[in-house]
Length: 149
Image: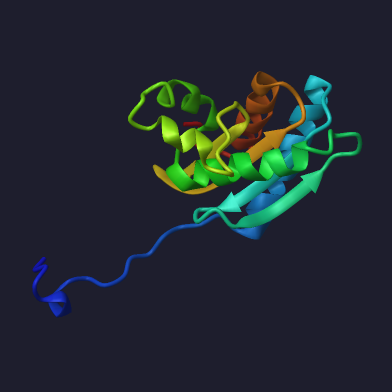
């Protein structure tokens, strides 16, 4: 690749992203997982770029959990990392400022949707405690054959 001659460089790349059908199937599986944990949740699925692909607000889910679920999925899409890992990352003063980003969520319940080693989207669940939200997300991912990162 020649930085001085952009005409010889590749100018685009392809990126895989979750389909609407798969996003809705994840929501259905997450609903079942949440019910098994006895919690009412909101579930958001974004594509690889962080754009909302599918969303469901469960009856009785706390009203703030709708925005939190969407922001959990967005946080994962932004960096490709599950939300539960951010507490440790943000302890480093060099990156601590990221905690002040408006949509950044550093509590469990947001997981990357990984297929063939590539992040193709994210799921965010909110309504239970951080561990319950994470369990529901991971159970839904496993049920559809996605990798749990």
